[in-house]
Image (cartoon, rainbow, N blue to C red; front, side):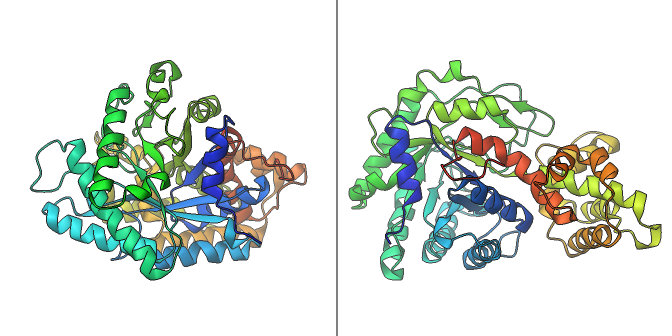
Length: 435
């Protein structure tokens, strides 16, 4: 049986006029990955999971995983769920000099070449060439031409690696107006979408740069252009999509048979806005912090249930452990959260930017999480407490749609954050389970 090229099929359908798309799960937490795979299985489609250059690189990133390790983690979860491996599409997000911006451009690009090669050799299918960030010896603003030339340099490495490794040639995502990974660092007011002429200039610069390195033949495999549709989130607010502001921009790709837009930082957009984004040709919707935010909501709810059911000496004290570890290792949040101690504590726990996500892999935090789940499974959670703290999961349990164990509750809460994406992308294929 021929293997389906899921991304190409989606783009073909979208360019033919169907309002379809795909959401891209940008998270490395096993629970989020499990939720994404369970959701894809229910929809009857495929799952697109991307590792970012912050999470996973040739040195281990902040997760401690290299591209091979992350691939094996995802595939292992898919196997455990009985989800076919050929329905798992892996991508690499923000692959470029992002991690080495404090180095000279030449040093940073050398690291980026090794990074790209590691992702491609490990079988990642979707490669985001992101050279939009300045390095230590760069001017304050990089031109489209410089970004495109650097992207072409990485493209050449990717193509050579794919040939030597005997893996499928990747598809690529390009763009110069790329949001910061993980949401805005500063407080936002509103955003201006990318001007249509700027998007056209980006396309022209990349097409020319790819031809200059002998790879004009690759252009049909450039599947998406990252532009700013005017969506973003900061610590306390969400900037919603306003489709009237993108009327000119969304016509830019009308004559590009193989290209759609990719939208970053779509976390926390409302269902209607997600559907409008897909209709307006943002056929790839990236989501990351919004999923670990939902996971944190579920785990904090379970921690509150634990205080009602488990004697103090046996409790996980998950929330207290997280707070202690964030204070002891503040590097992931202290440059982001301002204000007095109360404001900082609130942001550490509850902000949309979810800097807490960097701490789930901490040994003490992970041990507390596992203790929490084990405690609740041991004592059993009475339904009225689930109704109190996780009402949507309560309704599904009562309807016979959801298991009663603690991990199932967390996974389903993450799926609540994914369900609007599945609906917006029309992922409910015939034969899929609409749950």
